[in-house]
Image (cartoon, rainbow, N blue to C red; front, side, top):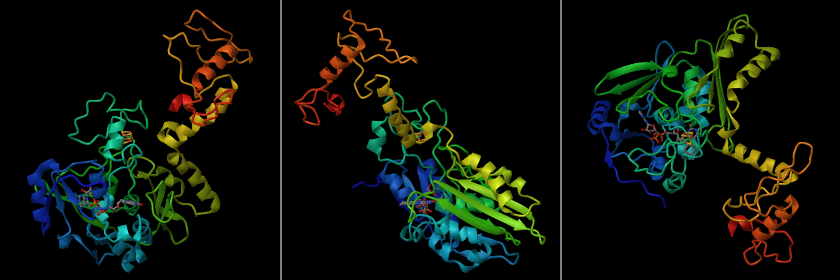
Length: 408
Ligand SMILES: Cc1cc2nc3c(=O)[nH]c(=O)nc-3n(C[C@H](O)[C@H](O)[C@H](O)COP(=O)(O)OP(=O)(O)OC[C@H]3O[C@@H](n4cnc5c(N)ncnc54)[C@H](O)[C@@H]3O)c2cc1C
Ligand code: SF4
């Protein structure tokens, strides 16, 4: 069982108290809302804050208030379940209802909050693992602060080893939708007071430093402007339909003129990079009716943003590429699963690669005994096969096609 590291729990009752508790503890304190993201991350030692400032008892941070102009002020500590069931939100911003209703599972939505969802940490297969797992790969750029890392290579990004930045992916569901709706967030701290910024200015395209919220700032309000006739929707692609983080999400808000042409359109993609990405190609739709052709043209242009940047971006795909290359490597005379023999030993080297013409061009062996490539291949296989250790336990086999050379 994984346990949280020790921390001090502070439960203020007002925004002012919370801001001052956060300021007193400095950058070593973190805000705790529903805890559905931060608690698993603490257990995996992704961070180790000295204090958690809980917003659970701050009542002024909850609830939805509708203004006379049709705008809404949403308390960031409102739970996603409450927002998904809110009739006024479903009527005016159906896309927001869909977005918050698609987060995780009903149980998680009953605890998770809107503020937590906006600030949720970026995700990566090499990061969302327990401490020991990450330690075994010498961590990466997103190593826990304060961890004494001495192994070389800890500053490597395992997704893109030659990259100087972290590519962890933004996985918030409400962020893209609120951006498409033109919402703003209010941030409050003891030192700087209140500031209201547009949602489009909240994120940064950097997997490590993904949010422009200062460590001592609390999200105290989310304001959604009146829809003024705009229609909104949210679509989410995920691996498990019942509950999962998005693999790709699309948030759209479109307003039509009386004649049926598009007057204003905002489309934001989620989970394609380290921040929600506003699609600029919506300009193609302006002044047009949403015909099948117009939609197809726009979708074609917008899909360019949703393509993986490079094969290394997806470890499974990279492994797939490696695996698919094995038959071809084997066909050209390699035994790809054999260990490369040491250059110091007199053991035969790997079989030669065939040239483009198909002729076998032996590689230069460091040993004085240079055998034809077929003999070297056979000797290498025989050396690798050890009947007593063979995983197939098939001592009668002439060749070992198992992986005893790797596992033995
Ligand atoms: C199994 C599982 C599936 C999930 N699926 C999804 C998913 O599909 N989509 C998705 O978006 N998320 C998903 N999540 C992540 C998480 O549950 C949600 O993002 C949730 O909304 C986080 O809200 P919270 O209140 O629990 O945040 P917390 O865990 O309490 O906090 C998350 C982060 O936000 C900060 N924070 C919280 N509130 C404030 C505030 N008011 N001001 C400043 N900072 C604040 C915290 O300091 C912390 O860094 C999933 C989690 C799990 C465990
Ligand atoms: S993208 Fe790279 S640096 Fe960022 S968490 Fe993943 S492996 Fe680490």
